[in-house]
Image 1: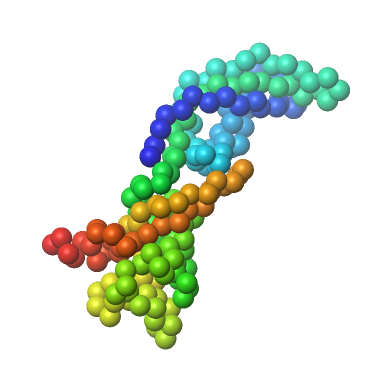
Image 2: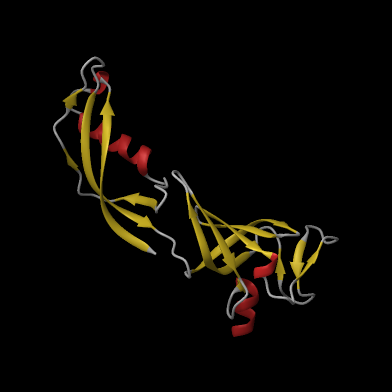
Length: 177
């Protein structure tokens, strides 16, 4: 789910960047350092306006200046039980890996419907129901997040397609038409 957060970050600026364009350098540095990163609880999608930049404080002994910047950002925090769209990145006999945007997800063979069988002889290897449903690399899937593990700089999730209206998005669109 997407949220709007007010965040704060301390950015250092080398003395060679001091001058009339110092605030521009700080904003550029903030964008480069923060956008697209994971805090362990959420992903920072983009930074909006509302920059409040404090007065610089020179760090003794190094000459660099520290600035505290307050800003608003759009963040994405995945929740257990949330239904999301993903793209399959690899398929193994134990299940498949998919990317939910920046969040990697694994769907175990135990969380795939029983009619979907592993076909190692197919090229590329895939899960199939010998009908119109095929799970292979590049397949667009709709899955449900059933678990999330957070690390300091990243997150990982476990998903399921063993419920109604979950699975290959293309196969689902054929059911509805």
